Amino acid sequence: RKEVEQDPGPFNVPEGATVAFNCTYSNSASQSFFWYRQDCRKEPKLLMSVYSSGNEDGRFTAQLNRASQYISLLIRDSKLSDSATYLCVVNGISNFGNEKLTFGTGTRLTIIP
Amino acid sequence: DGGITQSPKYLFRKEGQNVTLSCEQNLNHDAMYWYRQDPGQGLRLIYYSQIVNDFQKGDIAEGYSVSREKKESFPLTVTSAQKNPTAFYLCASTRNRINMNTEAFFGQGTRLTVV
Image 1 (spheres, rainbow over the protein chains, first blue to last red):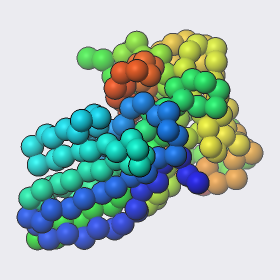
Image 2 (tube, rainbow over the protein chains, first blue to last red):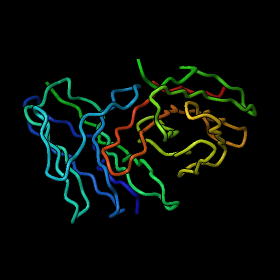
Image 3 (spheres, rainbow over the protein chains, first blue to last red):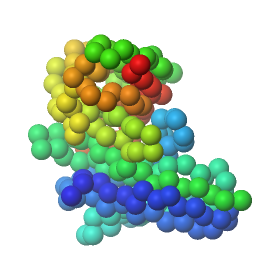
Image 4 (cartoon, one colour):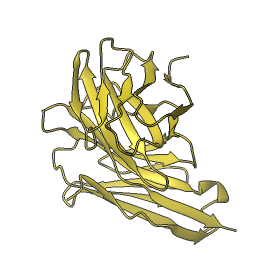
């Protein structure tokens, strides 16, 4: 089983719609969770951290479910500019007992006019 | 301004040659990472380092080597043993505080092409 798994998509969604992504992780000791956005041929950039209580930033809402070991990202009222690849990131403990950052393969989102 | 810098942005290599990609950060981050990304694919971990003079293999370390002689620098060497090195290489760093939300900062990446 992969350490971090995402549905690769692509998700093709009409402008104004709501879209949700899920990401599962295998290491129950994982501590920190993030969603990153990556535009074509660019480096990933932090979209938002994911807190245990869930958090919202404008049209974006992130949730963490530790019992089921998944995190989610909800985008409301989607804009054309939301078209990108969304990467789930988990920060946990490696087999060597130190910190390790693991990325999902990303979910590609295209917003259709 | 603090940040993480990768160089060069584009790199062409002949088959059979070793090549070294530079990654420097002035964020005073402890941890540094190298990832590889192929077209339409996610990031795969090559090597990572939590402290100076220590590093661990990631998921696809074969054909690569790294060093961490200074906190600020984590160069990646792509050796001739790497069978398919053409890819987008990304370097990242974090503060290495596992109990806090440790955001990763990325360099702009190096596109390596074997010719």
